[in-house]
Length: 568
Image 1 (spheres, rainbow, N blue to C red):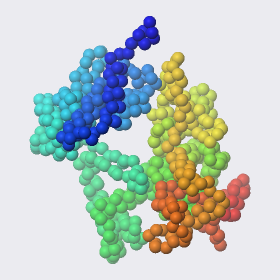
Image 2 (cartoon, rainbow, N blue to C red; image 1 turned 45 degrees about the horizontal axis):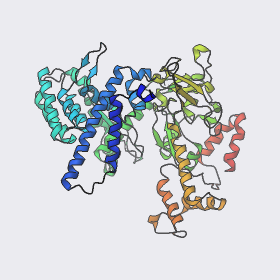
Image 3 (cartoon, rainbow, N blue to C red; image 1 turned 180 degrees about the horizontal axis):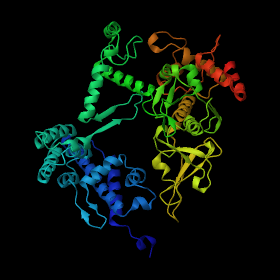
Image 4 (cartoon, rainbow, N blue to C red; image 1 turned 180 degrees about the vertical axis):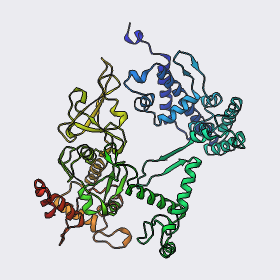
């Protein structure tokens, strides 16, 4: 008997193999013989098949959860299992769909019917897709808890009917109309309902550094915000573009200065609101109303920047909350700051020196941890919790097992990941890299069950993105133009920094492909500046260099460190 006959494949495995075979043929089939009607029918049927396949996948995920496969494979939650093992792109949203439309298994083994059976039936036959399901669930989630059960069932059937015949945008609009019918006088939306829906989110930064804030405010907070905007958000007040603009409330401002600033103000109402909130938060920070310490860090704006970026006044700095700040904005903020100095071994996270006039051990360790090249976020792979939300984890050896609280053995870890470190399956083992390009960084390994193959070690590569982009950018340029020579470096640097832009109508050389490619660098250099700082002859040092020289000169052990800056 062959091995194949001894362990026959299950029907589910055979069906998935057949499905992939059909998809291979569907991806390469000639569509030219199809009429217009046939092509529309094929495309529509394919979209229905995508929805049906997703529904079948939800059923399989539910079965995996019932068998406790996430824990058996070393993952702490179903969401982690879906994201890393099954490679589901949006596990949180998919989990919400699953809970609403899939048949689940209770702890006692009983089958639990879908929460929204009519919507689940439409999803199973492919008449609605994932976007339609998401829009319908967003509406159903806003039904007040006090609504009668029969009304909720009728609303679910109505939303399934709407989802089968409308676009996701239309579903949202029609759902708002349905919600108005369910509670026309607001009797069901009591205070507990408003409290349940309150939220405020600051979304991730966009490529230009800005971020979107969304909120659902309670009446109490809405009243406070509107009062703030009524007295602080006035034309002419708190204008960052006007050095003579009064700050604070317009009632406390000089009437003549306020009137003159209002005439110069060209901001939109939304921009005025933004600047008023910014001015208020700045006043709160300056007055120390947030307290003295948060997780061992001072409750102030804590920002780290590269010395080369400071000297050439370009690039990005990073705050302890993970926000990227352009260097010119950092210089503008730095008028009244207390600087700290941290020096690291070349191209590593190994600290060589950290000093300040006042010695506060715990605070110094946390600040030097943030100042590391990888210290802006939690060290766990894939985690983006900023330095203000992390603890210092004994990465080399746990404190209970004799580990030392030395900066060389500590690594930033958010509370969630810090508590997942241990010896049991599903927990993490950590250590500090002692050599190589990743020296001084913390690696994490997910513990598998005894007898299972060990999982690989991983680093959090999020802080490496600028450096890796610089590497790839230089590699691409070398592939296009060949390895740089001394002369090409000199010419390339002059072309990048001194050549006029294409819009200026001037040219300093030929217009060959190489020059066109080099001019294109001017358009891509805003992503990351990988060029070395240009050596400029100065009769006196810049303000940044002079301040650094003064700081370094105070420490006898560090006086030699200022020589490279003087020679520049």
